[in-house]
Length: 406
Image 1 (cartoon, rainbow, N blue to C red):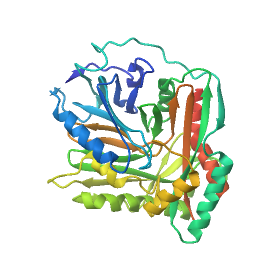
Image 2: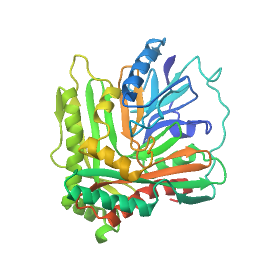
Image 3: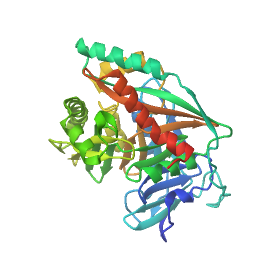
């Protein structure tokens, strides 16, 4: 395999040639896109991260690598997507036949001499709009979701646990197979500051960086606590931010998420810096409390990206506190398989560096059907009706992109 510099290729998402499993991890103008397939690895169970890490290390050792660029995202790359639950099948690493990347004004292409085609040339098909869509209940309709939130609140007030992040799903059904590139492009246009991702039919745009590993450093962005225009009568961005920062419920939810991440990372880091006060990130449809965590790995036997992901997943932002009790409650009250929603998604390179976000604001595409997900952090003073409205606001991100409504 060879990585070499190329002239600026323009908008990365426009390079994806067809709808056959496009691969993406793009934020604003930088990131990675890939197509074709050299290899894939699937895993399930509690050991899925360790199994994927072992397979990836062995695969990289088997390669003859010629990397003429030598920056994060060059050389051997696998796109990764892991299930939320240990019991769910479908965690996957996909090694693209062709990868194009850009970072800080430099662009490159990585090509394998083996894979699913004799050359980098692949017939190009135009991006196909979704067309007419109809919506149907998923495995957990809104009415049952509200009941699940109410039951979770009851148990928290009884002292069984502190937080659980409950989600529900919605089906969007087209008249023809849906094109992942159409949804991906719509999300990237609306959410340029998020990471727009596509891995094995899971397509979304996440604002939450689970873990980044770069040359011995570790970074994470935790989001927990949400407000949206119109909630509590606020529409101005500054007023929304003020209300969010002053919300006892949201600050408590955020503190639980930060603590869970920090507690998981500390044993693996030589240094870890956690901000005392969150900031506010304003997106197209919602605003979140956010905290950026930074750390350094030890010089001897540092954990790889996938090992770090195994340690921190799921954080309280998408699982709950205590973790074990929250995950069990999610399985009981949701009564559905989340698949790879709220699991780690992103990429890993040959040295164990890379970026993994949390698969939020997403849909799993299967032919003409898109399964959309949205969830909320539930604590003892959560209101079920408010949580239902918050989930609906989050679902709009994917619904609007599917329908191409600006």
